[in-house]
Image (cartoon, rainbow, N blue to C red; front, top):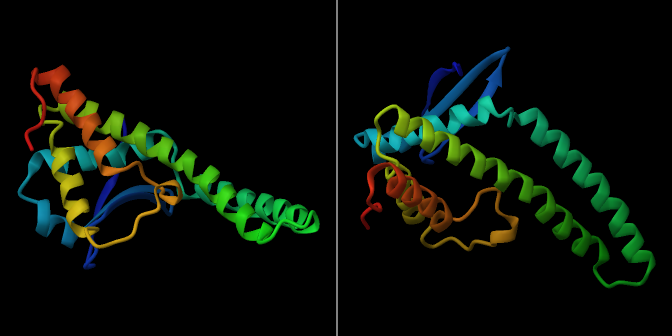
Length: 178
C-alpha cells in the first residue's frame, strides 16, 4: 500500500533516501549507489524496502526538522543553566547531550525501517542478505572516517547486518555469508 516515485541522483556519494516533494512520495538512489550495488537485486530490494518503510512509518523530513528545532531550543536553555551554574563548557556539553538524545530517535526510525524493509523484501522473494551487502559498501566508503557512534543518525553497520542475518536465519535457515 506504499507508493513512491523513483528518482536518480547524480552524485559521487552512494546513498538512498526518501522524501516528500509537492505532495508526492519519492525514493531517490544515487548513481554512485547503483554503480556499486546495482547488480545486486537483493541489496536493491532491501534498500528500496527500507526507504518505502520510512514513508510508510511517517519518518518525514518535517518530523525530523521539528524534533531538531525542539532539541536546539532545549540545548540553548540547558547550556545557559549549566553556564550560570559555573560548569565549564556548559553550552557545548548541553549541545552534545541534546543532539545525542535527538539522534537516538532517528536511530530507532532507521531500525524500524530496516525491519520493515527486510520483511517486505523477503515477502517479495528477495534475500535479506542484500542489506549486508549494502552495509559492507558503506563500511568500505567510511573506512578512513572517524565515527562518533552516539552522534550518528543511523545504527552501526554491524547491528544492521545482524538484523539481516536474523531475518535470513528465520526465512532461509542460514546466516548471511561473510
